[in-house]
Image (cartoon, rainbow, N blue to C red; front, side, top):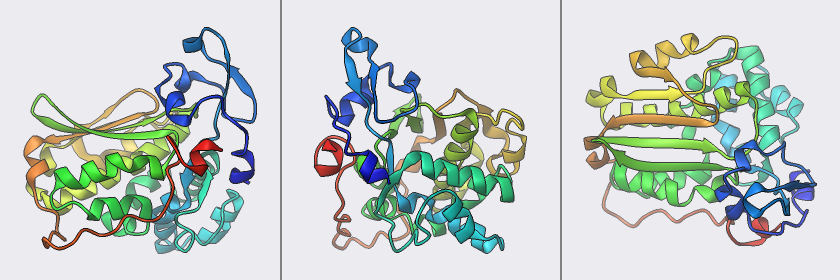
Length: 277
């Protein structure tokens, strides 16, 4: 379904859409043209937001561990149930968010924070493989950052150093509800915090997390997972801040051998058949 919709031609590539300052405020992505203020009101066909099916694999794993009908929840969201076997398939980002909403309805609004573990990340091939190519946290996160456009078309992950802190920032570049932003970005934050806990447990107390709050529950339900450093932030933006020395900590699999090959999947933005569709 996502691939069929994605055949709508775009007047520019998806990267230009990401860079457009009006993209976050655009209407829900669909097969129609929208006015782009950056181009003086010219018609700009908006590409369909896509993400790899494996993005939901850790969530599905957690649902199964907790005894929920994971396959039924995945089917209800309109996604294939073989999230591990078809991890590299490109699917609608909106369908993926529907999966998170349905999971939260049965497992609680903090389910993403429980699912975001390093064990679960192993099934998210388009992120796990780049991460495993790094020998320390700096190089591992840089691999993920540089290859993130293989994973999602309208989401950006960046790693910077600001004021003596490492900052991992996740941004969504399409319109989504406050609930969707909260559910999806607590998931990303949980993976980053889980990485810190695995490679630098001594730095964990100094980690700060900024997330969009749930419109009904705020952030109280995430306090146990993220600790006193948790704070509310704007919609569609997530930040994890940690001491800069984290970047030099070795990854647990660092052996000094040949780096694992990247998965043979196309970029979802920039160039290639999927980006041009």
